[in-house]
Length: 291
Image (cartoon, rainbow, N blue to C red):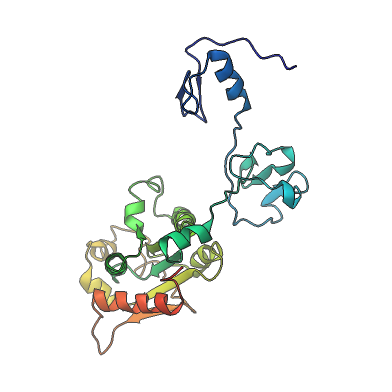
């Protein structure tokens, strides 16, 4: 018979990493301090790693061989042990927990396939305009979307990043990781940001399986973007008040093999609705608008 620890004071609180559960109410049932303390000692403290990260030399290290298929972790399982601990980047002793409800189940519920539509182009090319128009058209047809706008993300998640080369690369990586989560949830995620370098865009593409990364290149001439200048940034860059501005004193690398190219026809830029319809036609042809 296992001896239980002495009952803690009634002020004891239990929870996962700061989440607090008042003593006396666990699972909807009244319980005393001793039982609460005993249950608290059994609660695992784990964090999630990424299922997309494949073991690579110098990047991911497993402490020992993975457990047999029959012992794979399930949501709520207490089978987590030293044999399943991993190191990913700077994160150590972490475990990935699988849940019985996965991407296929979520897509079936939404009757659509999760994907990332990555809109790239110069500042002023119409990326945010297209993103919002596409989201609106899909919403009206009953599809669930979410827009990750480059400037919007810098108001919160990426507010600690500047516009130097290293921080801009990290900005894109973070947005790629968030977009991947939206796609895994079954949502059609629309990311709109300059993302000037192929290497960084390709790294985001590599995060997603099953060809669910759709790169849309807004191929609008620089002089048109400069004439639009909706934020007044080109004028500031040309006056030397902004350094490293894409298209002025920093390069933009156009995609070499993207899924969709949107450009002028007869010297005229397509309307937001026409651009959105072009992307929606691609989604329909590739089967993303049904589970």
